[in-house]
Amino acid sequence: MQVKITGHGMEVTPAIRDYVFEKIGKLEEYFKNIQKVEVFLDARSTDNADKRQVAELRVWMAGLKMVQAEEGAKDMYAAFDLALAEASRQVEKHKEKLGHEKKREAQKAKIISRTKLTSPKDTPEAGL
Image (cartoon, rainbow, N blue to C red; front, side, top):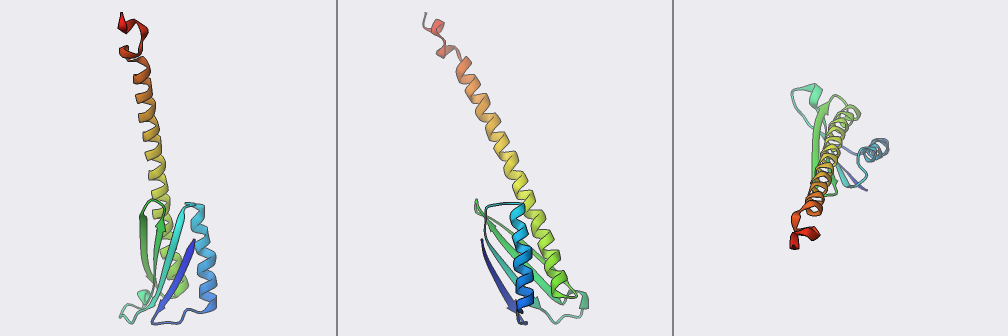
């Protein structure tokens, strides 16, 4: 999994970088086929002091699926944790949908194979 960390309006310190790499690794617990993660850390000058530090995550998964989460907080660590929690929920939901889709396809294949085995054209008496 590739991880890219970008800071806007701030310097990405080694402490933040290590923290991000440590936490991003936990995303693979939800879904093994994560291709790439981009993390954007932004220090904005807004009137709302609770939303000045913003973390945005973009997670690319196998199957051409990308999830995105953006959260703001008073400090960068809290903003990143909030964005990571949102991205984790989205990744878990995607995995759940894939599981349901595979079950539906398996049931459909099972029904098709049963109908082919029991169709009158395939029985030896059909030619009589």
